[in-house]
Length: 167
Image (cartoon, rainbow, N blue to C red):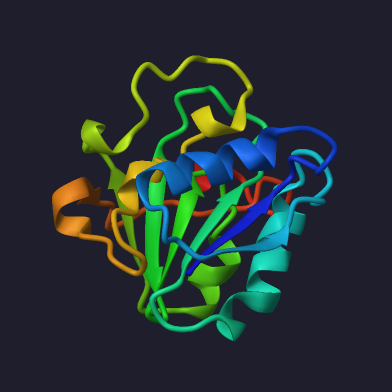
């Protein structure tokens, strides 16, 4: 199971493009929309919405969350492993509430280039967001040791609540 939570809205093709990218890698993927109506660039609202519902999904679920004022920037893509689930998205604080609730979480920076789409541009197109669809070769399977480097002291913060310089 792969869930999607974004601020893309549903008036255009962006959500469909993300789903197409995932399904082109794994046509049997089961994709559930949490919401695409997070207010634009409202990381705190995205973090709260994810916190409110993640534990209703089964173990092995991959939650993809993209609410990012810096889409197309150099923000690093991360995977958080917590509560037998995985959270994939930009390192911008979107997973901070999950990390606060799940004390035994682990955070990884996705570094294996083979898991990203070829030739990503700096456009705002969501399929160029820091969510590598090739990370999902089979539902529920992420080999973190092969695709990433551990980030032992990853600073997860919601910009409206914390000063990132204090991390």
